[in-house]
Length: 459
Image (cartoon, rainbow, N blue to C red; front, side, top):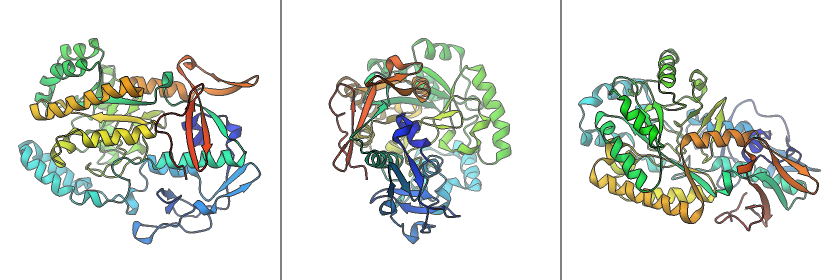
């Protein structure tokens, strides 16, 4: 019941007492938990909606209190897992695009090398028509997971008559939020542009990770690998052949996973991303990676629709998922035909309001063109300003992975009349407090006022 909440907040366990107020339904379905929070899972008493067309019963009025316990009409950890692993996708709210079918995907990727960029753009716009009519996840950033867990935290505090609750702050050294930049290298032209792209990133004192395709597309010279690492950048593996078929069948995936694992060892890489963001998190245990970056927050413009509905890292077994929380550069520039940073900045603002992780994919294959490069420079400038003025921690995916793993093992304990953090890495951790302000939940770091932008309703 409370696992997901404790994993995110790292608060003392006795302050969170959640139970079910009845037996769960046999079948999972949709329901609301407040006006703007759509959930998917089993619930008590009232049958859930099976599809988007049936409507969603609002279960927020069915919460009960028994002493210091909160009795809920659903298991929040199970619902959060359903969202993070996109288990709702087969039930109508996030229908797959045409490219999600195996047959269409194989035909498209067979023909793709012969298709010009304008033709590909036309086909992709056709595939994604009416994307903006999709009701769920919520565009342009979905924070349903955060809404569920914050509401449960607020209810727990009310049940125990707490005005403040201590927890371990999300990011090291008191950073308000975090950001990572990643570069997926898809073609020889993109590989050739890698040194210049590193130059551009370095102008803004930003380091990124490069995801290389280990087979078929191009050969990766050793001097490129050495240059990436010697300049403080990161190298990860992207798919195997980037043909759209990695997850087409379980047998094919397991066979390719063996090759991917071999390349991970060869390049001493710890991170992975699937080509075109195709994914099946239930199969991830076959990959020998520390972290994955293949699940979008909102996948309206991806070949495989869905979205994990969170702006924070989370574990899938032993693998840490670093979700893609902003639009890819290709979708921005070529599907939406938008050559500005407006959407990126809007998404970053929404992510920062949740103190989450803003993650970006920018391909060297596209930004080597002057017009696209200007847009990317605008993004780098914006990120640098946020780092200087708003406490955004801009780092590498591997550093986020190391921090989130350390934090997951930390605990808060009493030391006399005060709280303190225990565990490896605690010297960079910060004690924070969640405070009830009317019907709102606000955060503050110990010894400071409220975190800027944290005034928001949690209901």
